Amino acid sequence: MTEPAQPFLSRSWLLATIAIVCANFVLLVPSLLAFQSFMIGDLGWAITVDALWDQGLMPTRDYMYFYGLLTLILDRAIFALLGRGPNAQAVLYFLFNVAITFGYVRFVAAAQLGRIARIFAIVAAPLAVMPVVFPSPTHGLEAALLINALALQARGRYSFALALVTACVFVKPSMALVYGAILTALILFESSRSKWRSFLPAILTALSTAGMLAAVFGTAALVKSLSPADGMKVYADEHYGFFFGVGRGFWLVEPFTLWHYLLTPVGFWLLGTAVLILGGFRTAVVGRGRVATATSTCTILHIVFICFLFGNHLSWIYYSYFLVLGLCGVLNGNGLAPRSAPPNLLSKCSPYALIGLAASAQVATVAFSLLIWTSATRTADTCGLFADQPNANAWAELRDLAQRDRVFLLAPTGAGHILRPEVEGMRSWFLLRAATRPEEINAVRSQIRSANWVIVPRDFANQLDRWPELSDELREGHFQLVKEYPQYLLLRRSPAK
Image (tube, rainbow, N blue to C red):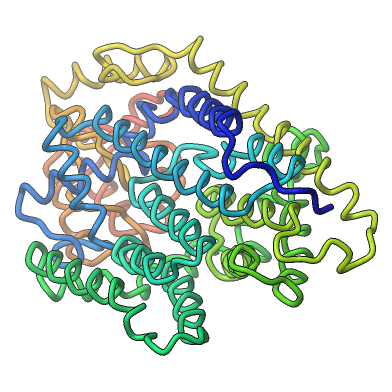
């Protein structure tokens, strides 16, 4: 499987990688600027949280929030430059793509890939950089920091890799903690007598970042944001998990459809995981060199993700770069002697199978994106964002209604009340049953009590049995369903009998 190394970083390889990443980003623009995702989905919460900040409301103190605080500083900076809205967030995602691509090509350059592994790296680049749109800026910033830390590790620069991972702890205190422990162990096992100097960049990063965030948000909020306790509660309550939770919906499709495994990332992800685990452990045992260590690190982090951090069927996108970069090292045989093991069917066939599946895995994404590009509408009612015509028509009516009466949008997250200020919305980050505070629920009840109309997304309406406080408020307010839209239910307050 091992082939002679190619030049350090050929211009043709670099241009091909950048081209395919740019093409993927353009294809994802309709999803990146999707009206529904900003109005009532994850993409909108960054805008809402920034607006809450202007109102004097702080995360972890005034409302539940279990991600790190560093992303909120970056959000504020980009919104201050370009205005608080979807277009500014799209620019931020573009910058994430640039940073992630930079880390990707630097890792591959350090790995000195041969021909087959290099072809794989080009074809699989979109699956590593941004396979679909990140749910929030937090996930994009986390990916940018961790993939560049891997690139630094592959070059033997452990101290600076640890500094990036330390910064990532203040973005999302989950995988960064695991990766930080691995880098710490690698530094401690080095033979250098000045180990403590290797920790200096990370210590300075931790102190400066913590000091800045404490000054802005307060020490209590900072400490609370670094605890994974609320996140763990939500994972348990939402029945997340790869093997036995709702994450099974990613890999166990019912009814079984072969095309689903061939034309979506599922087949590539499953085969790639098997190859990475087998090859990664072999590399860990007999491999030598910094790239071999980085490949083993990718394997460990990927396994940790599967066993402990995998959530629902979309969670595979969070750390897909671990899988792709690890496979680059495994397919190239980095750190292994050419004859360290006899060839077998897996070693002969897996590179070509993975290349084929990496290409076919993107068919559904490409087809879906092209469909949105050609069929979606962008109007003033959709804030210039991509939406289907029924949703555009629905919001034309709802906007008109909100200009004449009090309308409350009862959605668990999103930026509907920011994009459509004539509609009132919740003053919180996310309504999650396991972690939302009683005072947040009481505030929502008060908003329902003062509204004459309530808009409820259909998906959330199906979950109202988990929120008896809200469903009771709707019942006591004598709200009745007056109209159904494709994605929303419109309720109207009726006079008490």
